[in-house]
Figure 1 (cartoon, rainbow, N blue to C red):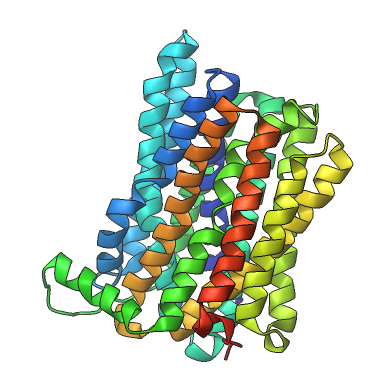
Figure 2: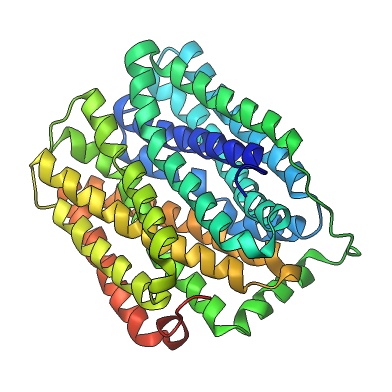
Length: 397
């Protein structure tokens, strides 16, 4: 399965790594060069906020056009974002005056995320046979998580070797290569007659409303992604303040998420058929919230490393099971719209929680902000388990 579609999967890894390099660059640059936690939170919100509006239209387009066309356009916006950041860093002498350029770059990245994520997930459903869709979905999600984890590590290595200009150049190169690889991937147009966009959106919402399992999967995904914002906004500061890590150690610490998330996804691939999927999702979300909260009470890098690894492991399991369940239970005629709802959640929830995390860190400190964020997820997971019978009883196909 992977051998036949290697170009698509490699392109996914390059693009997701490049996307998270852009996201983390906005946050870390705002904190360390612009000296503003608030700008870090706003920048992160701009990176993932636009899908709240544009994601609905992206889903309609994915059910009308060839997804690869949408991916090419979206990745061009990421390239523009990296170019803007590189120009701002190089040609604007006063750091405070670079803020508008970086916020515009963050907005370009946010618009790109609105389209690239649902288009790639829709393309996966087109190019992979139904019998291989579960494994392909798990592999796809592993690449998403790997890109998320490699982003901060790549930034740290590039900054040590060549500075911020090297970081931005790497992001551009990853997207260019990823776009070239997509020329080997063939996706199709549905050929449906054009209808008003709002009608197509409403049809997608009705499909979710008529299927309790899909609805509960999407709601659970909202809470599953709640920790992504605090991880990206608070953890970089925690590594400097409470943990006192140097540049390379910070990158390695934040990069811990990559192998941990992958390990969680691999566990799902190996034992998914033996797990009660719904109960596993609830348990993983609750426990990851508690462990993340525990990071707020330690100043030991070793303990923090172990806790973050466990949070990543459990998060990888939960998200992998959610994505696979959605792909397996969605109807083909509304696949793009339903998957766009999932990607809206995966991008907007980190943005909202990132904004809240930035405000919490500004008002309190990194440790207490982490404690509050983790406790909120744990309580939400317990409430979901009590009030979602369809997902609680779901065991997977």
